[in-house]
Image (cartoon, rainbow, N blue to C red; front, side, top):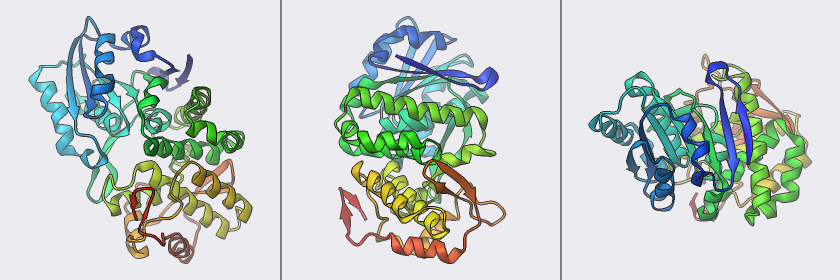
Length: 369
């Protein structure tokens, strides 16, 4: 087992990474201060791991909320089911919420914890690769709005993050690939050696080699923890974690939440960001090809949806949280392993990128394009 630390003074917390951690209460229980625990999960994860989680919480007063599964349910209306259960069970201010599931469950549970009685504790137990390497770490919580992804939320740090790598055995192939998009992101923005390791080990990751997956998770969390510790509320360097996300969120919103998985949309967004970086004279053709090749080898799409016209794409990108004073800021690449946030690009270049990266077919890998 590996233990990493997110250093945030009094809000610091550990990330535990290992096999069988759900069956080991000693890693979970010390981070629960009160007697009342609400486990929030979804219809897919509950039959697989809810009983293990409840067994680890033996001796606590537990209750559960089982949400529908899917990005389209990441909204205030569905999140209200958590509040209903907390109030009906009379959970107090020393309650702890546990997010057992993927990024949607984690974001909604964290946001509910930030709001309930003006803030209660919560713990992340992510069960998808994407949640394990990204969304469970850093305290970003929230829900979607029809006009924009993750536009309603709060920063609220968990007490700990418990990553049981055994949960990846039941993850379907599409979700695994989606998680690899966020893994690749860390190599692109700040870790060239990790990017090179991913080039050499992508087949092992897709083959679910336990050692390879554990290493990818550890390195991703190490990178994320380092960035979050330096900039908790995204006033500076943390914005680099959004490589490809302004493009990707536009795809998710424009196509309807859940049509594209988050990682699939981010993968295309990273290719678009790389192409714009090339047009600015920062990346070489060879570097862009390396990036696109690795993303393709991870089983991810490399072209945006044909149904999303360029002007609509740009309008949706304008809803991004990094738009300041009417100027769109994008995370771009100076080279592989070094990212910057900039608004210093001509709108015409952005149009060229979006025009260039539309899909020419209507479906790819089961995704509606």
